[in-house]
Amino acid sequence: MKGSVKSHIKQAIPSLVIMVFMVGAASAMSSRFFTAANLRNVLTQTAVLAIVSAAQCFALLIGGIDMSVSSVISVSTIFVAMFSHSGPAGLAFAIALALAVGAFTGFVNGMGIVRFQIPAMIITISTQAFLKGIALILMPSSGGKVNQAFVKVIKTRVGIFSVAFLLAVLTYASAWLVLHYTRFGRRIYAVGNGELYAEQSGIDTKKITVMVYVLSGLIAAFGGIILSARISSGNPLVGDSYAMDSVAAAVIGGISMNGGVGTIAGALSGAVILTLINNIMNSMGISPYYQYILKGALLMFSLMLFQIKRRRTV
Image (cartoon, rainbow, N blue to C red; front, side):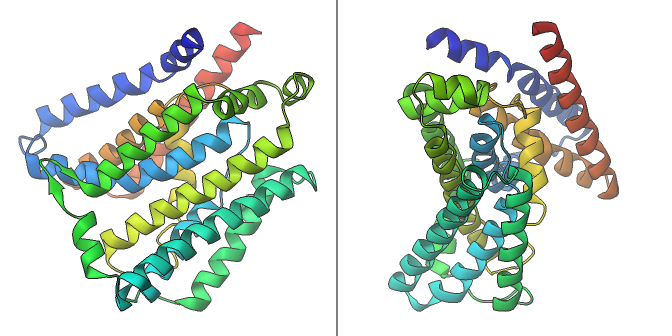
């Protein structure tokens, strides 16, 4: 397994190089970039995207995709905003409800794929639309009130790190251990490298697929809970950008959309890269529309690079 881990880590090296280059370039262009306040801001902005990208990684590693993460995030912020203000019991209920809905959404996605043979993209877009409708009914516009004690905890600073970012790091540490040092993690890679071969080796691929999507839904809901504290409200549309951004972060970080290749660490660097793009371009006064162009170009480049590598190994 050690050799396998090393081979997956190699996939993340290009994104790490890009991240270091961007930090160096930003520091050279602006003396304000490498200040404690700005670094803290960048890391805090990275936290939610990083968490959701971790969720996306699990789906991508089995050769799937999870577009429903965006609506799971939005619904989670709404639940926290609707119920958490009533005190600790209300906060606990809101968090439990958000996690339960995220897990159930993942279960529906997984069952749709393994029982009804619905393509991952189609079923997850369907659950995304379903949840988005519920979110808009519950809260047509941004509102509600998030428990202020919870907000204070999530926004607490430890040096240049916020609790939100530290929770993202904890998420990645846990995901790393699961993927590289457990039987479940090894089976995820096996399914991604070839479902038929995985079945022939005795792996219950259907069970693994459902479990992966349940886990993806849980992690996305966790990201939504953290986001609710950051924006101090619920918002039915706040998660919209996270579906594609989480895919982009994972792919830029070396996760193959064909499944079975890459490591969770790459997704973290990919999330930092996307956040740096926003931060640098905003500080330079460049229109946000150009951010989409640059993100799209990075994603296309990463996908083409994977295809070139794949052809060389075939």
